[in-house]
Length: 60
Image 1 (cartoon, helix red, strand yellow):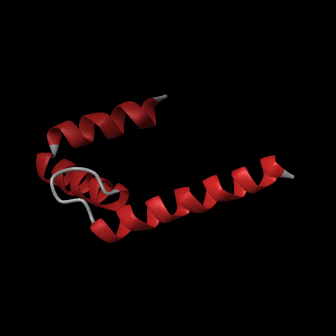
Image 2 (tube, helix red, strand yellow):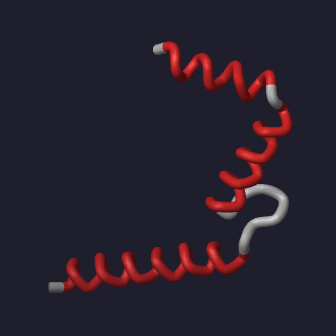
């Protein structure tokens, strides 16, 4: 209950902290204006590996 609402209100009242959190979250997930290209490549490689494993399993 109250924790979520208090956190939301805190971020509304403190735009500097809200922007800092927003930047860090976006950087971590590789979204926004300056995505980290290394993370994007890693995700793509992991996806390819998972897809290959699924294909190999289906053939057996």
